[in-house]
Image (cartoon, rainbow, N blue to C red; front, side):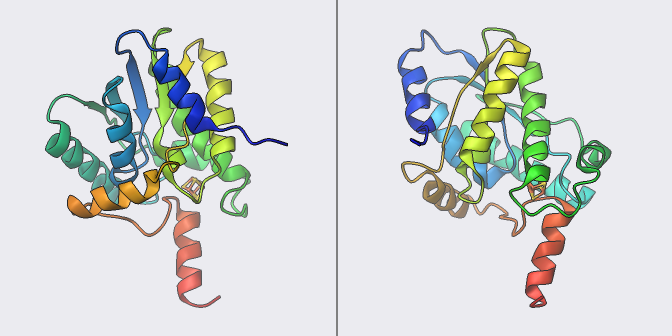
Amino acid sequence: MNRVNYDKKMQEIIDGLKGKPRLYLHSCCAPCSTACLERLFPYFNLTVVYYNPNIDTAEEYALRAAEEKRYIKEVYGDKIKIIENGHNPQVFEEAAKGMENCKEGGERCRVCYKLRMEYAAALCNKEDFFATTLTVSPLKNAEVINVIGEELAEKYGVNYLPTDFKKREGYKRSIVLSEEHLLYRQNYCGCRFSKNRLNENKEGI
Ligand code: SF4
């Protein structure tokens, strides 16, 4: 079965744009957003949606949110808006109930992607687009993320921009930009389960 090239799909949509539509970009963190913003900025009026109730502690949430705001301010000034409405970890805990033992990349992650992407989709008017930075990570399955995006677009009657930001050296570029701007780069995905797994690995379990 041929895999869908979501990066090519993105470029085709961009080539067909008339004007510069609004795009709500769900962002998981500043480092991942760097290369995505660079790629989208010439074509869209961007609003970054920092909605991540999956993050395990209030401190970690605040740190990642502050870095996202700092980066946008440093590079784009006031040209990119940001929406950030607080942590709300109970939303994630509720959604992840019964999936505590799922492996990373499994059903709990699918639910987590959807939860966060849906927040951005729900902000759109019908002519707007939404997308997510999640596809820049080589650890995340772009197909799973893009299928969720297409389902949400249908549900809300809005436009989803398919992406595979890791393509064309996107992930490498995110590392370069993160280093240039001295961004905090966390070593776990975000939820308490991913933190536990990290700690277990450190202990050699
Ligand atoms: S590992 Fe990452 S994507 Fe999966 S549930 Fe945790 S925070 Fe969400």
